[in-house]
Length: 227
Image 1 (cartoon, rainbow, N blue to C red):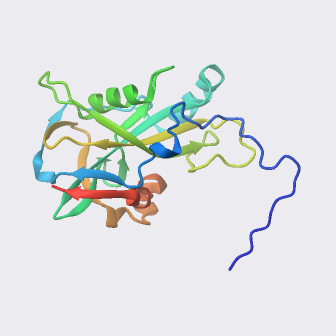
Image 2 (cartoon, rainbow, N blue to C red):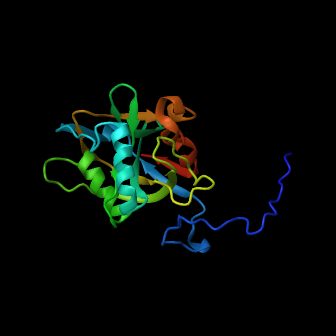
Protein backbone atom coordinates (compact mmCIF):
# COMPACT_ATOMS: atom_id res chain seq x y z
CA UNK A 1 0.00 0.00 0.00
CA UNK A 2 1.39 3.39 -0.93
CA UNK A 3 2.20 5.79 1.89
CA UNK A 4 0.68 9.26 1.80
CA UNK A 5 3.27 11.93 2.61
CA UNK A 6 1.91 15.04 4.22
CA UNK A 7 3.10 18.28 2.73
CA UNK A 8 4.50 20.48 5.49
CA UNK A 9 5.03 23.53 3.28
CA UNK A 10 3.66 26.61 5.08
CA UNK A 11 0.23 27.61 3.89
CA UNK A 12 -0.42 24.34 2.07
CA UNK A 13 -2.84 23.75 0.48
CA UNK A 14 -2.98 27.16 -1.11
CA UNK A 15 -6.34 28.78 -1.66
CA UNK A 16 -7.16 28.75 -5.37
CA UNK A 17 -7.15 32.17 -7.00
CA UNK A 18 -9.87 31.05 -9.39
CA UNK A 19 -13.23 30.43 -7.75
CA UNK A 20 -14.56 27.03 -8.84
CA UNK A 21 -17.44 26.91 -6.39
CA UNK A 22 -21.05 27.19 -7.48
CA UNK A 23 -23.18 29.69 -5.61
CA UNK A 24 -25.70 26.90 -5.12
CA UNK A 25 -24.26 24.63 -2.45
CA UNK A 26 -26.74 22.07 -1.07
CA UNK A 27 -26.34 21.00 2.54
CA UNK A 28 -25.05 17.50 3.18
CA UNK A 29 -28.51 16.38 4.28
CA UNK A 30 -29.92 17.41 0.88
CA UNK A 31 -27.49 15.33 -1.16
CA UNK A 32 -29.22 12.16 -2.45
CA UNK A 33 -27.40 8.90 -1.77
CA UNK A 34 -28.34 7.55 -5.18
CA UNK A 35 -28.94 9.44 -8.41
CA UNK A 36 -31.53 7.92 -10.69
CA UNK A 37 -31.93 8.80 -14.36
CA UNK A 38 -34.54 7.54 -16.78
CA UNK A 39 -33.38 6.48 -20.24
CA UNK A 40 -35.67 6.00 -23.21
CA UNK A 41 -34.92 3.95 -26.34
CA UNK A 42 -33.26 5.64 -29.30
CA UNK A 43 -36.25 4.64 -31.43
CA UNK A 44 -38.41 7.07 -29.41
CA UNK A 45 -36.65 10.02 -31.04
CA UNK A 46 -37.04 11.50 -34.50
CA UNK A 47 -34.14 13.16 -36.29
CA UNK A 48 -34.59 15.74 -39.02
CA UNK A 49 -32.17 18.14 -40.70
CA UNK A 50 -31.74 21.90 -40.97
CA UNK A 51 -29.30 24.39 -42.44
CA UNK A 52 -25.61 23.84 -41.78
CA UNK A 53 -24.21 25.34 -38.60
CA UNK A 54 -20.62 26.56 -38.74
CA UNK A 55 -18.18 27.37 -35.97
CA UNK A 56 -17.43 31.01 -35.24
CA UNK A 57 -13.74 30.35 -35.97
CA UNK A 58 -12.52 28.84 -39.24
CA UNK A 59 -9.66 26.90 -37.65
CA UNK A 60 -8.31 25.77 -34.29
CA UNK A 61 -5.53 28.36 -34.49
CA UNK A 62 -8.10 31.09 -35.18
CA UNK A 63 -10.10 29.96 -32.16
CA UNK A 64 -7.13 30.28 -29.85
CA UNK A 65 -6.17 33.61 -31.37
CA UNK A 66 -9.66 34.97 -30.64
CA UNK A 67 -9.48 33.55 -27.13
CA UNK A 68 -6.13 35.29 -26.63
CA UNK A 69 -7.52 38.62 -27.86
CA UNK A 70 -10.66 38.41 -25.71
CA UNK A 71 -8.96 37.22 -22.51
CA UNK A 72 -7.79 40.67 -21.29
CA UNK A 73 -11.36 41.97 -21.69
CA UNK A 74 -13.57 39.09 -20.50
CA UNK A 75 -11.17 36.85 -18.58
CA UNK A 76 -11.77 33.11 -18.42
CA UNK A 77 -13.99 31.89 -21.22
CA UNK A 78 -17.03 30.00 -19.94
CA UNK A 79 -18.48 27.15 -21.95
CA UNK A 80 -21.09 24.49 -21.32
CA UNK A 81 -21.95 21.17 -22.92
CA UNK A 82 -24.90 18.82 -22.54
CA UNK A 83 -24.75 15.06 -22.03
CA UNK A 84 -27.83 13.43 -23.57
CA UNK A 85 -28.30 9.70 -23.03
CA UNK A 86 -30.57 7.15 -24.65
CA UNK A 87 -30.46 3.36 -24.66
CA UNK A 88 -30.41 0.59 -27.21
CA UNK A 89 -31.23 -2.92 -25.99
CA UNK A 90 -30.60 -1.85 -22.40
CA UNK A 91 -27.18 -0.31 -23.09
CA UNK A 92 -26.61 3.42 -22.44
CA UNK A 93 -25.61 5.51 -25.47
CA UNK A 94 -24.46 9.14 -25.49
CA UNK A 95 -25.65 11.40 -28.30
CA UNK A 96 -22.65 13.01 -30.02
CA UNK A 97 -22.27 15.41 -32.92
CA UNK A 98 -19.94 14.05 -35.58
CA UNK A 99 -18.16 16.36 -38.01
CA UNK A 100 -16.30 14.58 -40.78
CA UNK A 101 -15.11 11.07 -40.03
CA UNK A 102 -13.05 11.46 -36.86
CA UNK A 103 -14.24 14.52 -34.90
CA UNK A 104 -16.88 14.15 -32.19
CA UNK A 105 -18.26 16.70 -29.76
CA UNK A 106 -21.02 17.19 -27.21
CA UNK A 107 -23.69 19.78 -28.02
CA UNK A 108 -22.93 23.13 -26.41
CA UNK A 109 -20.55 26.03 -26.76
CA UNK A 110 -19.54 29.42 -25.40
CA UNK A 111 -21.64 31.41 -22.98
CA UNK A 112 -22.34 35.07 -23.49
CA UNK A 113 -20.94 37.59 -21.03
CA UNK A 114 -22.76 37.22 -17.66
CA UNK A 115 -25.15 34.63 -19.15
CA UNK A 116 -26.55 32.07 -16.73
CA UNK A 117 -25.07 28.62 -17.38
CA UNK A 118 -28.35 26.71 -17.55
CA UNK A 119 -30.06 29.35 -19.67
CA UNK A 120 -27.01 29.47 -21.93
CA UNK A 121 -26.94 25.71 -22.38
CA UNK A 122 -30.64 25.69 -23.26
CA UNK A 123 -30.01 28.43 -25.83
CA UNK A 124 -27.10 26.55 -27.36
CA UNK A 125 -28.95 23.23 -27.44
CA UNK A 126 -31.85 24.93 -29.22
CA UNK A 127 -29.50 26.53 -31.76
CA UNK A 128 -27.82 23.20 -32.46
CA UNK A 129 -30.60 20.62 -32.16
CA UNK A 130 -33.80 22.64 -31.80
CA UNK A 131 -36.71 21.82 -34.10
CA UNK A 132 -37.72 24.18 -36.88
CA UNK A 133 -41.51 24.03 -36.68
CA UNK A 134 -41.85 26.69 -34.00
CA UNK A 135 -42.44 24.23 -31.15
CA UNK A 136 -40.31 25.20 -28.17
CA UNK A 137 -37.95 22.46 -27.05
CA UNK A 138 -38.06 21.72 -23.32
CA UNK A 139 -34.48 20.97 -22.23
CA UNK A 140 -34.31 19.52 -18.71
CA UNK A 141 -30.81 20.54 -17.62
CA UNK A 142 -29.95 18.81 -14.36
CA UNK A 143 -26.69 17.76 -12.67
CA UNK A 144 -23.24 19.18 -13.24
CA UNK A 145 -21.17 16.07 -13.93
CA UNK A 146 -17.73 17.54 -14.70
CA UNK A 147 -15.56 20.65 -14.83
CA UNK A 148 -12.67 20.94 -17.28
CA UNK A 149 -10.07 23.69 -17.48
CA UNK A 150 -7.83 24.95 -20.27
CA UNK A 151 -4.72 26.44 -18.61
CA UNK A 152 -3.24 28.01 -21.75
CA UNK A 153 -4.24 29.08 -25.24
CA UNK A 154 -3.64 25.53 -26.43
CA UNK A 155 -5.70 22.33 -26.93
CA UNK A 156 -4.97 20.48 -23.63
CA UNK A 157 -7.74 20.56 -21.02
CA UNK A 158 -7.74 18.99 -17.56
CA UNK A 159 -10.40 18.05 -14.97
CA UNK A 160 -8.55 20.25 -12.45
CA UNK A 161 -6.66 23.53 -12.46
CA UNK A 162 -2.97 22.68 -12.95
CA UNK A 163 -0.40 23.96 -10.48
CA UNK A 164 0.79 27.56 -10.90
CA UNK A 165 -2.27 28.47 -12.99
CA UNK A 166 -4.08 31.34 -11.28
CA UNK A 167 -6.61 31.99 -14.01
CA UNK A 168 -7.43 29.31 -16.60
CA UNK A 169 -8.15 30.48 -20.11
CA UNK A 170 -11.34 28.43 -20.36
CA UNK A 171 -13.69 26.73 -17.91
CA UNK A 172 -15.95 24.09 -19.44
CA UNK A 173 -18.82 22.62 -17.44
CA UNK A 174 -20.69 19.45 -18.45
CA UNK A 175 -24.36 19.01 -17.53
CA UNK A 176 -26.52 15.92 -17.58
CA UNK A 177 -29.65 16.66 -19.64
CA UNK A 178 -32.66 14.48 -18.95
CA UNK A 179 -34.43 13.74 -22.22
CA UNK A 180 -38.21 13.64 -22.51
CA UNK A 181 -39.86 10.37 -23.42
CA UNK A 182 -40.15 11.46 -27.06
CA UNK A 183 -38.61 14.35 -28.97
CA UNK A 184 -37.77 15.65 -32.42
CA UNK A 185 -34.24 16.88 -33.07
CA UNK A 186 -33.18 18.92 -36.11
CA UNK A 187 -29.53 18.26 -36.89
CA UNK A 188 -27.43 20.72 -38.95
CA UNK A 189 -26.65 19.27 -42.38
CA UNK A 190 -22.89 19.42 -41.86
CA UNK A 191 -23.15 17.23 -38.75
CA UNK A 192 -24.32 13.74 -37.95
CA UNK A 193 -25.94 12.93 -34.62
CA UNK A 194 -24.65 9.54 -33.51
CA UNK A 195 -25.41 7.39 -30.49
CA UNK A 196 -22.16 6.04 -29.03
CA UNK A 197 -22.34 3.23 -26.44
CA UNK A 198 -20.51 3.80 -23.17
CA UNK A 199 -18.37 0.71 -23.69
CA UNK A 200 -17.01 2.25 -26.91
CA UNK A 201 -16.18 5.55 -25.20
CA UNK A 202 -14.52 3.99 -22.16
CA UNK A 203 -10.75 4.56 -22.10
CA UNK A 204 -10.87 5.61 -25.76
CA UNK A 205 -9.21 9.02 -25.68
CA UNK A 206 -7.52 8.47 -29.08
CA UNK A 207 -10.93 8.10 -30.72
CA UNK A 208 -13.04 10.59 -28.77
CA UNK A 209 -10.70 12.83 -26.78
CA UNK A 210 -10.20 12.95 -23.01
CA UNK A 211 -13.50 14.61 -22.14
CA UNK A 212 -15.90 12.31 -23.99
CA UNK A 213 -13.89 9.19 -23.10
CA UNK A 214 -14.25 10.08 -19.39
CA UNK A 215 -18.06 10.00 -19.54
CA UNK A 216 -18.44 6.29 -18.58
CA UNK A 217 -16.68 6.95 -15.25
CA UNK A 218 -18.61 10.18 -14.65
CA UNK A 219 -21.95 8.53 -15.37
CA UNK A 220 -21.26 5.47 -13.21
CA UNK A 221 -22.83 7.23 -10.20
CA UNK A 222 -26.22 7.16 -11.95
CA UNK A 223 -28.69 4.36 -11.50
CA UNK A 224 -30.20 4.10 -14.98
CA UNK A 225 -33.81 3.03 -15.35
CA UNK A 226 -34.56 1.74 -18.84
CA UNK A 227 -38.04 2.43 -20.19
